[in-house]
Every structure is written in structure tokens, then in C-alpha cells.
Amino acid sequence: MLKKLLYLAAGQGTTRITELASELGVSTVLVQEMLEDLMRQDYIVAVVPACLIPCERCPLSTACLFRNQPRIWALTQKGEQFLAISLKKK
Image (cartoon, helix red, strand yellow):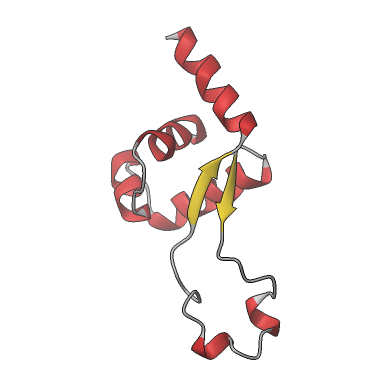
């Protein structure tokens, strides 16, 4: 299922977690957990705003425009290679 999520996330540009969950037939919580797992395995990275201070330590966190915004995920080189190999096998 992680492979399918990686393929869906990479092939659809920007997609809401709710849409991915619907496509996979699972909960949004599970999709979020799978995305975190793919990040830990270095298949994707979270693309974040240019702020270098963690939100919990930032004095401007309550006024921040980026706080609680959706994450954007990008494939890493490892993720791109994995998908390329997977597509060749089909």
C-alpha cells in the first residue's frame, strides 16, 4: 500500500490527504501515518516554508501564516528511483 500511495502522490501533483485516503480506501489518519513512514524511509521529504525556527519555540507562532498549513511532499532521489524501477517491472 505504501508503494501505491507513493505512486498516487507523485503522479497527481497536489492532492489532498482526503482524496488519497478515498483512493486507497483507508482513513486520513492512516494516510498521514504512511506519509510519515515514507519520509522516515527517505522516499519523500516535506517541503516547508523558509522558517528555520521550530513552531513550538517561535514567539510568533500564533500569528504565523504557515502554522497548521498543509504539508507539501516531494519525492527524493530514492523515491524517484523506486518508482522508475516499479514502472519498468509493469
